Length: 288
Image (tube, rainbow, N blue to C red):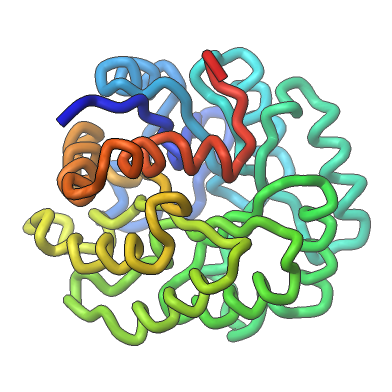
């Protein structure tokens, strides 16, 4: 298979000496309780043909996004930042403008919130959240959806309510891979994909499978469903590094993604591995 340029549309970075990652708790996540720096990610990217990346927030505090923007400002690899701001508070537009005025602010391409941790069934369609999402749309940014499979319905309702906003579904909505079920996840994914302002990331699947015994065959029904509903033109590769290391190495995740897309045409693979991310986020990368 001919190699194609790769944009890693979803990875994380953190320095525990600068900011705690309070979600890293318990023995299962213990391998993540260390620093994962740009100096660690850069050689992985170089060794695996990754020419650009999007770094994504992990904690819902105001201080993290400026830190990620500063990293991006000093990096030729990081082409975009998906940050965080409180969508429910008044003045969302002003806070977004302040972020874009910071060093690296030109690389702010999107925002997200840990909706997966919100207990209410309709957080995304609350009036205050929709007001914030409208401000994100006016700023020309993308909204990443980090949700569980049971929240796909409210995501579809939010995307329908704010048609001018581009929504990107992280990790295919965390399907129940370890349980081997595809429904109702697939039906709910279909409803979201039916909206033209949505796309999705082929990311995070190995950690939804059995971390210790997964095979590419376990992931295939979910990748095929995503390709069926979104098509390669609205699907993009993301490693979810370093979270993926709980179940697979960086090369292992990339190889799985290549295997899952092996039957696509060269143009379709190019879309999944770089074109969709570049278009969805408006990335400016070397040579573009």
